[in-house]
Image (cartoon, rainbow, N blue to C red; front, side):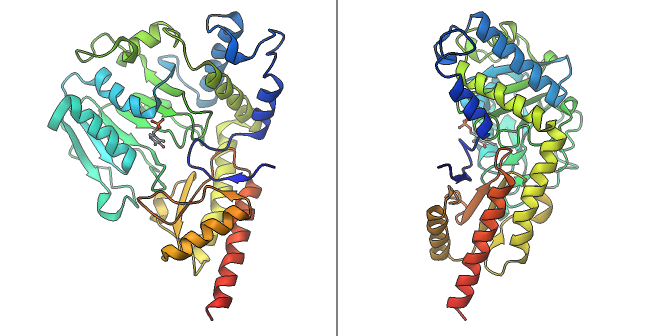
Length: 365
Ligand SMILES: *Cc1c(COP(=O)(O)O)cnc(C)c1O
């Protein structure tokens, strides 16, 4: 039996995709082998990666002057790849909206020291909001401005992109990848680990404007981490994460079938509204994020009582709602409701929360 899986990542994938992968496990389309077992230089895999690229380009409406790379190393390795590949002046502006943005900033400091500056932060209120980014003190010679667009741990999301004052925008979209339409032209680099909303762990997808892919990288940059190496070889410089790319390709097809990113957005808004509406009316549960900055993907909430939070998580698990425990730095609960979470999952969760609240009221009145 499958549970309702609210994990922040690796996370729920569409059941259809998993079933298709299961059907193709022993014999992928007459090749007599699994995609796991085939050469990355084979015709079958070449078709898989090319088709995946074609589909994500179509879904996100990616212009021809952007490359799509399928990489390894997780989003965390990409934190280093950004300064390695983009720093010419060893200056960059980071907006600190949570742990992932902070880690990226710390990584940049390895290369740029004080040149990697935090130009805004929401640390003062446990990252429960997105700071005003309309007029930030971005150094004129900054090589780029860096954001984490959806904050997986704290449940915030940029509703408008920062004013970069003409600088390149680099965005980590790990936990909101393909959750709604994006205007790719507003970014220099969009990237994310796929294990939150797109596929199995082990793949990073990076969409990079071509003019930012050069040989002019920081001294000491490993061959493999130079974007030009990967771009020149269509992500096949070395063995890519083949099986993960294959599953991502299936998820792209699934999203297309669901109606593309506009439809995904509508589906995600509908789901999130069910949960947020209840959090706003509940006397027991409270959302932790400023309303206008709420994420459609990650919804943290608390009762304000740690013992009660733990009781809720335990009873929810027993009822088939998995992975609702909040991140250790926020406490409480977090429901990650990515693309593949069905609407019934959220409806049933809210039903369960209402029942829990009613029982609590009864016991304490
Ligand atoms: C999970 C996550 C990361 C870290 O991803 P890894 O692939 O584990 O390195 C980075 N950024 C965001 C926004 C995340 O959600």
